[in-house]
Image (cartoon, rainbow, N blue to C red; front, top):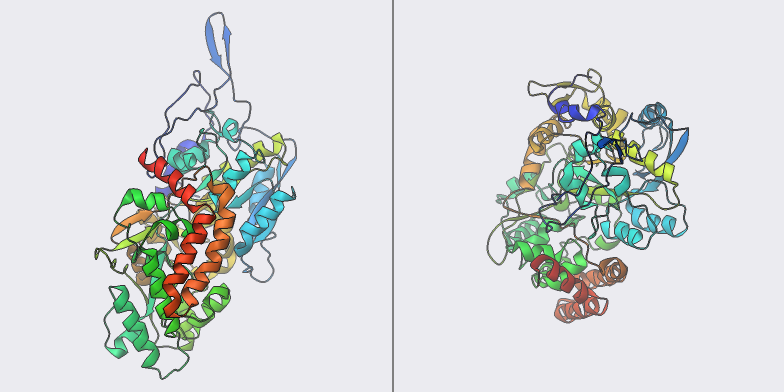
Length: 554
């Protein structure tokens, strides 16, 4: 593989450097949404001989290639989306074999443990409780990973990563800010956080062909959106009587359009990324649920939305029964999510779906986009793994950050899967071939990167658009719309009481979100008041007070 453009990002990381001096305390940078905190990296061993100091290697060698292990076996969790092509499984395929072959070169055997993607939290909790969790366990819920660490159930990774000669590929690719997301208040590293190629998160999609046929403009406010989907349902231009006005999988930007604190960056961080926290703290969430209740009671919202599986959600879209939907940023044309627009057009040739720029906030008329933090999923190592296995696990994740690791898994091989363009960006050769050869697994196997291995967001956009031939403009518009207006990034901070209280808070949320949306309009305010009271009883006030103190210093 040539090392051009993107590959230059990690050129420095491919050489194992030796230390030339003593390690010491250093002030580390943190992600933008958290106050600076002091980090104390592991110090390298030193020896004094005749007054001169000589640096020796760190106790654990976790830069890929710096150590050959003695046939150690590690287990690695993989999300299973049940999308493997014929002849392959999530654990036995061309790319897991490639990773296993590369790790055997340094004496590490890798066994993969599949976990259903949408049951990952429940499954993770069960595995950790029964002490059967893989040596590398993954989750998107940082608070659980930190809770396990605080309880003494997972390894402190600080001594495996912070030495100057350790995890050099990881440090070069992830960067200090992303690595620091996985540290607790004492700067101990409880997990390795994946780097996001883009923080674009969410979009509202709508049938553009129906807009045009009805002579309707693209909605810019929640009220306009309501009116548009109502017209599409009641006066459907295709004469269908089975149309659902809106189906919701993700609702982050819809919530932003009703948020009363969206324009206050500190308040947004205090509210956090958990629906339960925001529902308790943000007065505007009452109006968000009132809007959804109105949609539901007037027959514009899917009546079984709260029990809907993702496959059912997609089926409404591809059969032409959905006027609009809220989904992942590129969900309309994303190959990984089933190329929904392409499939719809096979059923309805004239159909088109576009993403809508964020709806204007009902309080200040501004556009706000909810965005991910710079980190994605987090990997941690349960204490059931031996010391040697943890060292091997960190070596595996370090390899994932290299050109021959994560880059190859995500992009494939030059000449077979892609060619470099004039700017050094890998451009897909045959999207159809790639979709069945590697794209179905690449995102789940590449544990240290979310949405791809790229040097810049522009590189990501340029490359990703080529993966949906004929829909390049849709891809570019989707990612641009998702980062339009004022960007509110997810918080990565976990308050001290959150791990203990989160499960109960989420149970309250799950119960009352359904009640608030489906109750009779006349009972809405009373039901929402009950919801807020139940959240407070479950500990929401405590968490908000802790988060307020953290982000305001008060």
